[in-house]
Image 1 (tube, rainbow, N blue to C red):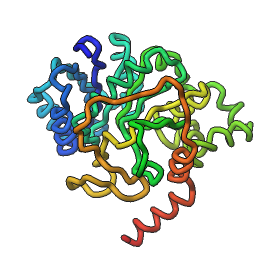
Image 2: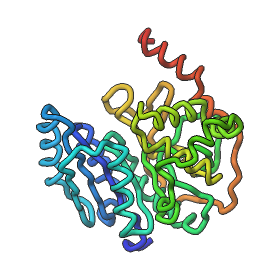
Image 3: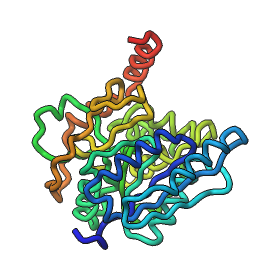
Amino acid sequence: MTNEELAPVCLFVYNRLEETKRTLAALQKNYLAKESQLYIYSDGPKNEKAKLQVQKVREYLKTIKGFQTIKIIESKINKGLANSIISGVSEVLDRHGNIIVLEDDLLTSQNFLDFMNQALKFYKTEKNVFSISGFSLDLKSLKNYKKDFYWGYRASSWGWATWKDRWRNLDWEIKDYDEFISNKNMQFEFKRNRGSDMVSMLKAQMEDRIDSWAIRWCYNQFKMSSFTLFPAISKIYNIGVGEKGTHTRQKGRFGHILDDGLKREFDFEKEIRVNESIVSEVTKSHSIQARIYWKLRSFLKI
């Protein structure tokens, strides 16, 4: 794969200096880092208290090296994560045909960019492939799994990639929400292979109780009847949940392992064949029972 074919990497940061340092340090270690273009979107402070931390992050960003090009876009106002991602991804995709997206609390394996770029190239013309995820749960169904990937119905926001032609026609306003919220069959289908939290999150978004681009992203995928490709071993480790120390395994509701990064060539298949055992296990991790179970464990500190 030539440099021209590599997707640009887009990183969104705010005021978390240490997490941002760790995220970029891991990304710099990627085999394809020096050949990749990096866009960094720095959101503006939401209040006076945040100004100093945002400034510290921005001063650090100016010292970053290790990529083919680095472009830092500093917002004078606080857009919030949802608007930052929607506008930033749209801007980068106006210049490029595809994109790889990260936030400031995601450590990547050394082969993350290899996996993402190869999958983006392989499925470029497959319109029913909505996105590529760099993240995967540590599932029992994957213990003896032989493939490099599996398919899911629910997109992940923890390190992902997509194409301009998938992104440009998304309905961020959810214009058919009134129809959806009055249609029990649609609500059931939205939850069925994705998780029982889908409808409640979309409802919260539309009632302005949360500000999430990701739930709208997932709803658009549902409406398009399309799929997300996941790695069999996660190329992403989220340091924004649980303890902040260096781990190779994250436990809890979203337990995951970070790939050792040694493999650089991945095998994909054009035909989309969903492994329902894997999908069922993923769906259960987003169930009401799972959410209650892990909240109780957190509360009881067990």
